[in-house]
Amino acid sequence: MVSLVLNVAMAVGLVTWMSSVSKSQPRGVRPLNAAAINSRPVPILNKTNVLIRPQFFTWRSVESADYAVYVENLRALGMPETTIRDIIVADVDQIFAKRRREEAAKQDVEWWRSTPSFETQSNMVARAEALEAERAALLTKLLGPDWNKGRTEEQTAPLALTGPVLGNLTDDVKASVQEIAKRSAERVREYFAQAETNGVAPNLIELAKMREETRQQLAAILSPQQLEEFLLRYSENANRLRQEFTGINATPEEFRSLFRAIDAIDREIQLRYSGDDAASQRARSALEQQRQAAIRNALGAERFDAYQTLRDPAYREALAVAQQAGGGESAALALYEINRATTDELNRIRLDPSLTEGQRQQQLQQAELEQQKARALVLGEPLPQETVASSAPAQPQLRPHVIAPFETLGHLSIRYGVGLSALREANPGVDINRVRPGTVINIPLPPTATAPPSIFPPGAVPR
Image 1 (spheres, rainbow, N blue to C red):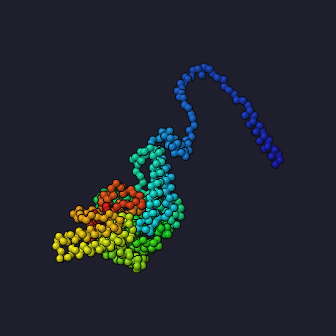
Image 2 (cartoon, rainbow, N blue to C red):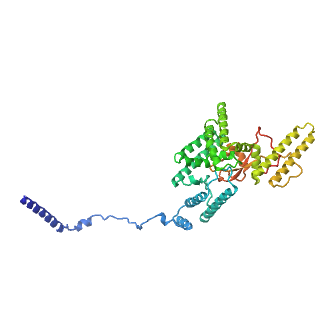
């Protein structure tokens, strides 16, 4: 064994030594054959002068904290002006969207009010207008006065996800909620546009299905409490409820109780019984009776009586006129009583058989003039002249309406029963397809055959 080991070691050493010797020996070089080289054709090489310079392009070398420098850097790259505009506008919009969210987070939406308080609404509008003016001024400074030429502005503002519940949502959940709401608004807007193009009335059941689909999408990412808070602020049923309870001044607790009591009933009516067939009408009538009972239980007897009074079309008309003139509920109640007394007096004069036609017309005009005087005193307006222009054509009466988030022209048309063209005519110079939430627009009150005769003479309602 020892001998075998020694032999192996010696063999390894011999191989190693021979390998090292072969590497150290210089290789033989074959001498050049000049004749062979001279006999070969020399290729002609076409050379190009190429200057190789490393290019390490990054956006960091273009971006700048100074937007003016940023714009110049983009232009130095030879970028088209339209592309520069899109980049800068998108960047500025992102900054101002964050500032709008910060402003909205400072105050929760007054979701329980039919109309936000004047102070709150004025402050919100003033802050929004100041931010928009600052944004427009910055973009004009950077891109010139025509920066907005040919651009289509976003038609829907982001929702204010504020309050003790929605304000605590994570940024990812907030972004998902905003995206769902945006897609829903776009889908409804496209549906109304298609219906108007085809000359057909929107199908209420189809609209209810769209709203139900949106609700299910929100329920997949929100807890039941979070979903309820969202619906209280932005759902169509909550918007309808606010309009229905205009003037009742419900507290947040009352409005929440009302919504919980009737939301399921309203959804069933909208999804299943919005048709005009006899079966749908019977089912709808039964559900509406359940709805009234639920409202009574939620409000109590005394508040329910006030609610029924406020649902009187004559009172609603008086309230709309008072609000348009800058008055409150006390002025509306005074107008309501004046109108009722005037209506009774006009009916008495018309039915008095002892009067001649001339006497009847004279007394009717005098009663209408007294109504106008009383109305002017309540609203602080100039007193009317002693003559009544009864032959003047009646103008459509208008009522103010505050635009809710994601509310469209089609929604208003269905809710108030007026045509799209009438809405546009009542708001000249206003693109009501793109007004921001909180904007007040005029709604023309349509004349109906079953409505009571107008208690205001021509010219009595401010235009």
